[in-house]
Image 1: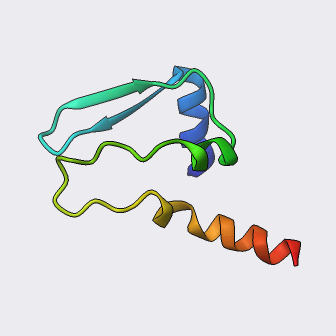
Image 2 (image 1 turned 90 degrees about the vertical axis):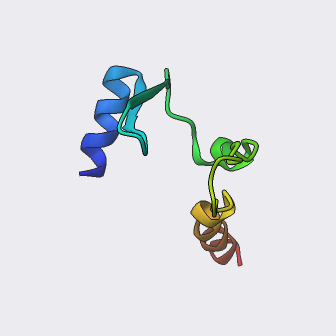
Length: 71
């Protein structure tokens, strides 16, 4: 399933989602970023969320895994 999602994003060159209010929203994505670039991106604006997740929660496991490999 993940591969199909990635292929759809690459083909459309944008990501689409349904908002909490039921509207379809999208963001242009002309290319997929490498993991390192995504991790270094600034935190997203989450002011409107009641309990936002920190960005690190989504990639912490990658950092831990790569540290373990380097040891």
